[in-house]
Length: 102
Image (cartoon, rainbow, N blue to C red; front, side, top):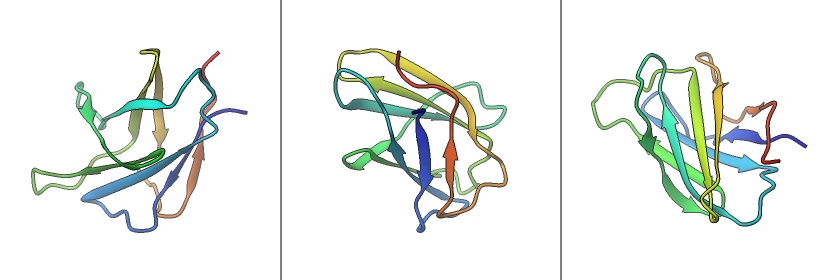
């Protein structure tokens, strides 16, 4: 099964919280980074608990989708999921990727 990203109900244009589901690797996630549309840089997300990660807009501007996510496992393996959460994302929705750790 491929990795899925469930956007938390409390998310809004200035706050994104994502539950990462079906991640198959040799350990837990160690880090998750987010890249906004046309940004070119990765921003670390904060871990709430388990596989639930969040990001606040610290600029006063809304976060700009689509969002790409970079997952790093405990073993250091990285997996990039490009544009997995669309610009028109909705709180409570689940977005499935086409990838997983091999």
